[in-house]
Image 1 (cartoon, rainbow, N blue to C red):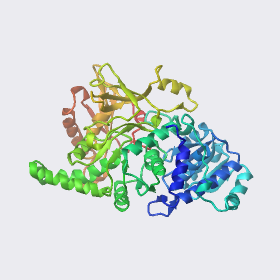
Image 2: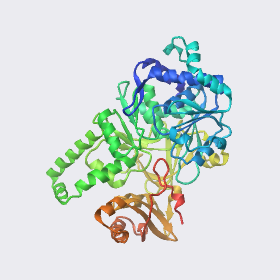
Image 3: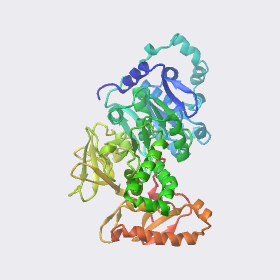
Image 4: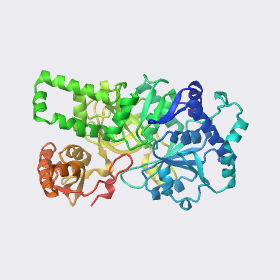
Length: 549
C-alpha cells in the first residue's frame, strides 16, 4: 500500500515492453513500448505548456484503446485525471469540466461534435482522443509544439527505451483522480479518490484473479470512465502486463458473445444487464417450453439438461475464464437462482465509486444465493440496525480504499461521514452471522408502507422484469398506492399482434402472481404502461427521482 502506484506501472511497462497492451476489437495492437512513447509525447506537451502537478485533465469518450493513453499520461505526469462518462449530456459535460477546474480536455469524435468550447472557459487545449490530434487551443504554444512533437520527442529521446521511463512518484493519501458519480438520485458529485484507493483495488484483483498474468487477455466492455471498468478492465491488467481489448460499440449480448468467443478472455467482468439479457432472450424461451419443463421435473434428466446448458454458457463466454464477476447493480433474483442451478461459476460483488469501487466479494465456490459476498480484506463494515441479521439498516464502511471527500462540496462530504469516521453508503442491507451481506436497496428509494413498513422497490422490480411483455419496470408510491410503471417489450407485442390494452390486462393478471410471493404490504395495486424507456445513468440504473409523484 505504501508503494508508488505510478512507479508500479513504470515497472510493469519495463517488464512487458514488447508485449501487447491495448487494442480495439478487430483493431491494431499497441504494445507497452508504443503506449509508453505516446505517454511520453503527452508529457512533453504538458511540460512545455506549463501544466503543473495536480492540474486537472478531463477525459470524455466512448471506450477505445486511446482512452487509457490520456488517463495514464495524466496520472503518471502527476496531474489529476477527471474521467467523464460519454453518455452524459453536453450540459453535464460542460458543468463537470468547469466544476473540476480542468485545463486540458481529451474528447472522442462523438463528444467533440456536441460540446461548446466557449461554455468551458478554463480549458486551455482540447485533443481529439480518436487521433490524439489538437483540435482547440488558446495559446499558440500548444499548436506550435503539437506540430513539431515528433521532432521534439526525437531530440529528447534519440533512442527511446524502457530506461527513459521516470513516472511521477505519488504518495498513498495524495489525490489520484476525480470521478463524477452517475447516481440515480440527482446531480453528479466529484469523488476525490487517493492513490491508496486505486492500489487497494488492484491488490484485491491480484487476490481474486491470481491465475491472470502477462499472457492474459481481457475484454473491456464496461465504461472505462466508471470505477468498476477502470480498475478491473484496465488498471489491474496494466499492472500485470496483460492485453486489454476494447469493445467500442454498445456491448449488446450478441456483440459480447462474439468477442468472448474470439478473444477467450482469462477473466470476465460484467454488469447484471448483460447476463440478464442472455437469460431472458436465450435461456428463458428454451426452459419455458412445456417439453423442457417436464424434463426438468425428472431428477436424472434434469441434471443432464442443466449440465448441457452449463457447457453452452461456459462456451459462450470463451471457456477460458475461472469466474465471472458481476457488479455495478443488483442481479435479478430469478436469473441468479437459475445460474446457481446450472452451476455457472459467477459471483456477485458490491462496491461504490467512493470506494474505488470494491467493498464485498466471495469466490463463487463459497457464494450464497442472493448475497454479494463478505467485506474484502482490510475493510470494516457494519449495518446500522438494532438487529443487522434481520432488520435492514444503512451499510457503513471504513477502509484504505475510502475516498477523500467530494470535490468543492464540503457539505456533502460532511454528510457522508459520521463523527466516528464511518462512511455512510446510502445503501440498505442485512448481514448474517457469517458476515455475508444482502443488499435491499437505496435508502432514498425505500418506500414507507401504510403501517410504517419498509418497502424496497428494487426487490419487486426484480420479479416484474421477468414477466412476459415487460421490458423494464419501476415501482413508485403514487399517493399511498404502490404502482408499477412498466415499459413493455413493444417488439414482442407487435410480433404477437397484441394491442396496448390487451398487454395491460395480461400484465395486471401476472402482477397478481408476483404479489403472492411478497408480504401483503409489498402488493402492487396499480399497473401503468409507460410509453418510453426510462432515463438511466450510464451504469443503466433508472434515474428514480425523475418519476416520483
